[in-house]
Length: 202
Image (cartoon, rainbow, N blue to C red; front, side, top):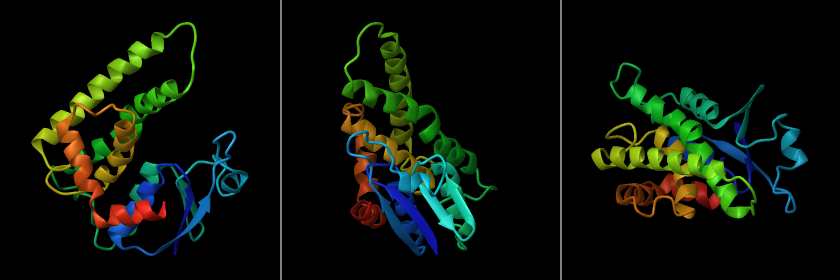
């Protein structure tokens, strides 16, 4: 039985979503952020020294980092769903988007979120850099979704689960309000029953 250590207001919802898509049995242990600092509690640090979520425990294995967790869970699926075969032309497209979510995209989206919520004074040179990154990344996303149904091609995959969590933050902060294909995509994937179940749990 896989145990998901879920931190409230975190991207670990994507792990619950993947498990629901795969109909894989699991249990959830909930951890609550410190209401003053918004940091993870000591209970999560007791599971993994990074004190970050998602963390899964499967037997003797404890694993964190979203991409690694997603790949591990996909490897456990006997039907090998939600990931193109390595012989498929879509496989490396899938791999790019799987890593783009927490690589190129997450950094400017998260920094933008922080900048919006904190008062800053002095040099704001970072603003221009983040604005450029956001413009490039979301133009790339919009152009991609204008030409295909899902990030890795015609079929829904785990790359969509990885991307959706960051797109939700971006949408909340108004970064995709002028991106009709991205907004339509978000609406489509959020209507999936497994997403709805994960959202209700996490």
